[in-house]
Image (cartoon, rainbow, N blue to C red):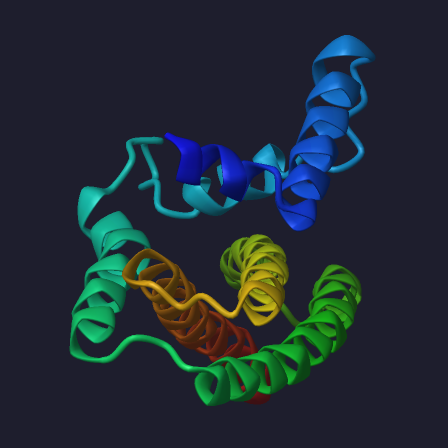
Length: 197
């Protein structure tokens, strides 16, 4: 118990407790929703619904649950190191910049489909749906990148790379890569339809 209290009195722990308390008080005491990300997560999960609005279990397992199993397996094989954290941080920073650029491209593509009279109504609807789902997935990817960078930053300061921290960082990295494949496939579908005009 004494070790726990000593650990709690460390300056960086006190700082994080204060930050968390300010966020909780802002959210529930004053109703501020500036950093709420629930809409992004909800809209991303809605991409896994079929035409009747029923949630599909297999895609959720493949794209949301499987990365955590992969992260656990990787963490059991090798705990994360400072070098790995540095590599992940650099890759995620580059990917985040690319995702913001891709976001503007998706918005432009959607506007182009609306204005293009060569699109048949069914093709336009499929392309619009793909672009909307791509938009939600890109926003989810940006959110995942930010969370991953925060975890990497925290673990760089604490210099503690345990099994739980390793699992979280590996899992979010795998999730980032898997969802990136989903984005590529959807954009390919839209561009392929456009190129065949």
